[in-house]
Length: 304
Ligand code: UTP
Image (cartoon, rainbow, N blue to C red; front, side, top):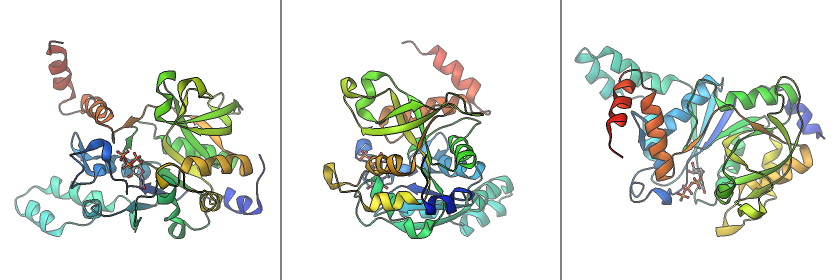
């Protein structure tokens, strides 16, 4: 794959930063999202975005940039210290709970920047440009959950570290559902240790009808990108709904600098969608060490 001079300077660099776009309006989840951010909707016992921040922390990310907007203050409060709550818990001997609350703020450094208008996912990434600077970075959608022991972001970081080329996570979806995703046109490019999971992206198509879809490999909300993506975004014209699509910029990046699709090990839940949210809730509740077994028995006993 071709590399620009800038790409070479960024290629050897560690992926230290992650951008979490969380400024969308969450219209698929109304009315729940009328007055609260969808990223703060709770899956079992944590807001969605905490799962995503935890994925960053276990993937070795040191600095997270959350892109927020109007009505999203609860996200900042959640990752801030909460002295009154901590003191309250400590005074009542609830030391473990106090420590758990403090740990949420201490996991990793978090900065915030605001997208003044929801002009699309691509635009949200672009507003983080100054905070990211000239280095590779991860992007994680704040409402896509990928539970499991092998974080998708870490898998992509490993691909970037080995190749110096950006990588996006893809997973197989039923052909009749391609119109819900960005879908890649890729050619097999196996190489150790990634094997057949690695594909070289020829093109990316946003929400194709099944008959026009170039594959059934859908983009699933995790990316590791070189800083050149910012130039690609700056050159991307607004598309449908006057939004700047990340997919359009990825197409330019793939053609100019190369881009991998990586069939990651795991499964994603779009928790910004009501059904996806329910599936994530059930899956994560079943894995809960405290009540997962009891919950399984409860589900088995339901008559349906
Ligand atoms: P979505 O399309 O899922 O978010 O974008 P949305 O626009 O809030 O959702 P609906 O379709 O109206 O229900 C994926 C991620 O990108 C962020 C969202 O917050 C979400 O985490 N996003 C989207 C932004 O930060 N800014 C935008 O302009 C659009």
